[in-house]
Image (cartoon, rainbow, N blue to C red):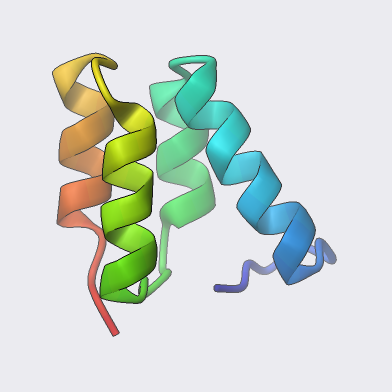
Length: 66
């Protein structure tokens, strides 16, 4: 997982998890734009989203897989 900014992969993952926890749909879309996620990581993010709004889960679901 990488992004065009200088954030390392661990910081990037932390930012994705924070966006999910804070229900920040726009930020999550920004972070996942152009990314491909491993299916295991994608499943983890879906679990983390838990009872978040449906748009958060849809954003994760629609992110391409590796």
